[in-house]
Image (tube, rainbow, N blue to C red; front, side, top):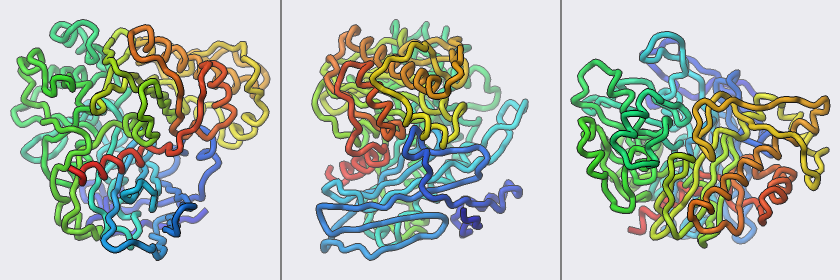
Length: 511
């Protein structure tokens, strides 16, 4: 393990003048961990920041083999066609962020990852310390930009970012300063739910305590200061704003859970009639060019003058785009810290009773939802080494008799929207192999219940499931899921949402 001090520059987010305790941060530069091959991207609250890189081998053409580790920028000479441009996508997930640089053919030229540094800050309600997520995300954004190999930075034509769905940031539009701490994707605001249900159509997507609209209403009703200049952004919007400098722009995927109607391509009248409607951002299609990258950012990171920043999407949509499942009936399950499913359907399905919603994807619909179960639960119980050894001993053909509902904390979003649902991880057998088997199979049953629910509600029947996220690397889990689902299940050729974000950046230059 290499212990190093990160390179400090005027634009380095490690320099935080308002927080002297953050003046120096340590960077742990780790080799690709075993966990990367198992369930989810590695993350530990004990690390300030860690990063891995991946050696890229392109069998088809004699192109780049880029590997980035630690705080340095390892650079390899890259043979490029004359005038070739590249496209940068970044994925900000639940536990860390990744970048991918692709060419016009979709070939990956470089990629890397960063875990979020844990800066501590005081929230609006000063009852306890919480993570300063805005500082953490900004640090990570600048770190990823700096990680792009120097030889590739001048060739970047466009940039796009995906973020976690329903992560809500409310800013002062005059200053860009946050008016409250970010409300994260898995936070619920049940206090606002009765009011939201009174104005929205029955079973609308926003009729869930974790929806963006519930978070907005909860903030609106509890914030006593001047709200005239308030502006709502989603995580991806805010990160992109740091790059293009135009406040108030979002995309119709991120805006779905605040009430935007992607079928009408507008906010509905029931939402626009509310006193807080002026807080809502303007909406563009994902992958739409917003404008050029800010000059100071461009100069510092070496991007070309014509580099543009494009609207983004949610992390699960980006993972679906990465899998390139283009036919109806094809589905993508993202197995990361949480479990998210997306099914390409000809029909739009919305039903907040079950946490089901539909994202627009050109002329089709991505129907699905996101559960609070997933790999993060495994990380609470097993070490990386345990997961590797125990998985090898599981017989995926045999059904586990154990019936769990693995959750990190109280509350579920999908396929059951129940903020009071308790985690169920007992009884625990003496055998850890049996215990892990039972948890993996229970998560697979939740996934099966989710796909069956979509069909019952009128979505196109699922025919095949591609798997993205860290869980896609666990072959035993794939076999368990294939048996439980009764469907072909395979790992997507591209499993990282950052690749999907890069495809959006590519789309932005084709307009």
